[in-house]
Length: 341
Image (cartoon, rainbow, N blue to C red; front, side, top):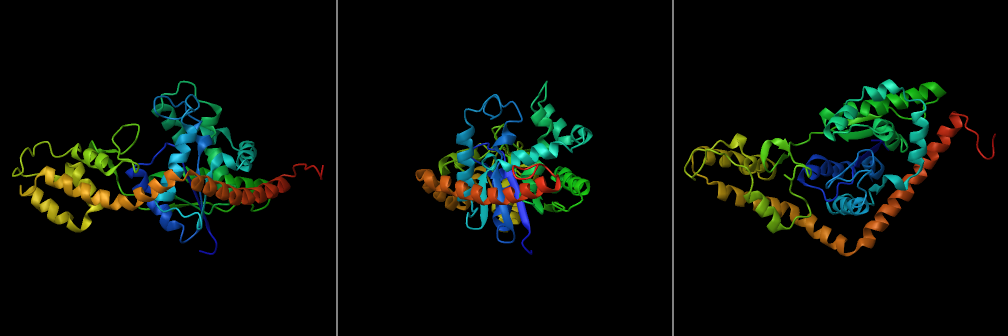
């Protein structure tokens, strides 16, 4: 793709679950063979909300470093390759903070007030007094992307609007200062599979809801979670006709066992398949798929210096690029330097 760059990040929520793996990370692994990729753990973004309970935020920073380490381990175990991608922690590139500050000087307040994500987060976290940092979240996000002159950000169709402000802010900067410093960032639309929680096909898997299966779970823990999955409430015995479209187990067979899906549907609807059999078959498929990731994860946990080295090397590469970007930004803004004022 002619050296095009992809940038993306995740909040440090700790060990990832299947929704993260199937919805984003597997796609990142594929992208690193096509683009120059920058993947970062957004620890500053984690501080824009209060946190509380098990969630990290500015009121609950005790688990922040551990959560960062856990997500980095999961990334590498799941296939992100430090020889192909820059993998690092957001705050380890201080130039991003400076670019965020400079962007904040030219960001119209109305853009931030109309941002739907701001309203959603205020309502979702029940925040009575939103912080300056939360309202400025999109400006920091733009700095995350444009510090590395990101051409694409991989998102699902429903998240495309989140990239619009980065594109608008980059174009506003270019127009104000008469030079195309930043590319026109575009959403790289990806097909995101619907990953339900273990309690309902209508709920997304999430750690906050406790309806998740973590990559870090053992095979025994995973099997137990599958045993507790919600199934058809009117199918009480094996020979009762089932309704697979409302069954969480069937939804996961659609992800992990596609080749046998029609047979599973037919057997369920005819009363030829019991729920216990269906769950155990799913457990075998899911655990088999996750086994290589978990084995690599175990080795990384045992040798924490590997992750430290990967994050350090990724930050050094990212910082060099961000430093070059900031020099260009300061120059077109005619900011005084120690040599020129």
